[in-house]
Length: 93
Image (cartoon, rainbow, N blue to C red; front, side, top):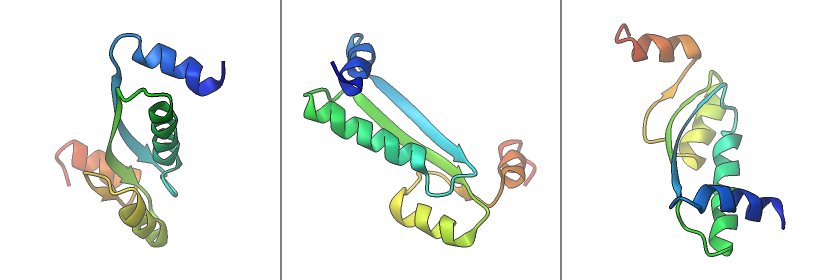
């Protein structure tokens, strides 16, 4: 049994999972890319009960913000830094 099969067993035994994902110091949003790879592996095994929504990213470098915008497409904002995110979350921005 490989890693994908092992994880799939624990994820899908009770009907699937939804993951809401947000990243800090996002860079290229590698966690999202990894989640998409896992979902593709699950689909190849005939398992389709995992879903991921990309809620936000936080990245200070403009070039990486553009990369995230083009390739990761979060449903929420791409914050410039963690302080901006924290202020926005507290309603202070």
